Length: 366
Ligand SMILES: *Cc1c(COP(=O)(O)O)cnc(C)c1O
Figure 1 (cartoon, rainbow, N blue to C red):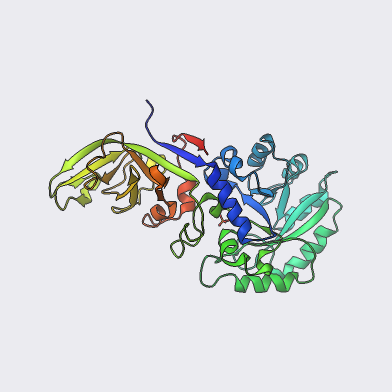
Figure 2 (figure 1 turned 45 degrees about the horizontal axis):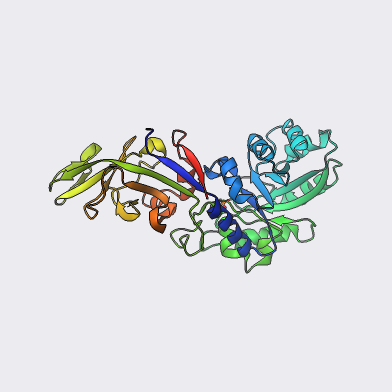
């Protein structure tokens, strides 16, 4: 028998979360962001749940090819655009829309021989200071692009730095609207945080296209301010395994490497076939929540490469073979949001779902 660990991808939960994105951004079209192999979900599996999107946004041409092979004929957007001039051939061949965020990308396009009219998203750096033209340089880039015979439509785009926090989108919106007021074209601004927190009430922010990623995968972009129940999102990935051993401890017994956890009294613990080599964060401390047979308990002691130890003191019926939910959907309707594990581990749900290791088998479920 293989090690009992596996990851499940929940098709209906993906579809539900997509509906939720639409509900929060009425009338907007949705780019389902599937970069990083659909945030670790694997594009072919995520596609089953997300095929109702208007388009898919990602970074790698290889990932775009996977989508085309799956039969997706609709729009695909390269969020970082082309990395060199030759990438434009793939764009023409596969019909990929692409972001333009620096001058050389316009040069490449101007020299590109194509009969396919390109759809480009011109990106403004409105304050995040990663990709994009400054507000001052934006108009001349727009004019140059619009004048190219290779280009069909130019859409306008920016990306928010703090849509999940109290400062919100105000400063970046002000720069974006001032610099684009009289430019035609679709607009795309919202990631998940902006879609959930701003899109419904602010049509200017909503634009014609939203670009949700993390919310589709059942994590909350503004956790712990709001959890997934608040946003009516469902976990789309379950990481689960089983108990492979138990130990009975007396007061003073230590658990795991470094003896960081010492039993305050008699205890029973379970040893779970899941460790940091499976993608479970080594930084998860004693107290991190976990489900055993669908009931909430806690991690005790250090995470090791292939195992973690959990408190079974209050679960006398749990033992070897009991099902352990590290995150996601447990038996009997129990749930453990990935954010609840990420927070004590000092990270975010994004990182955990992307980090599930290749040795963990991934399966699709309804
Ligand atoms: C990753 C990404 C998104 C999605 O962000 P989430 O926080 O996961 O919703 C949207 N737009 C761009 C440009 C991105 O790179």
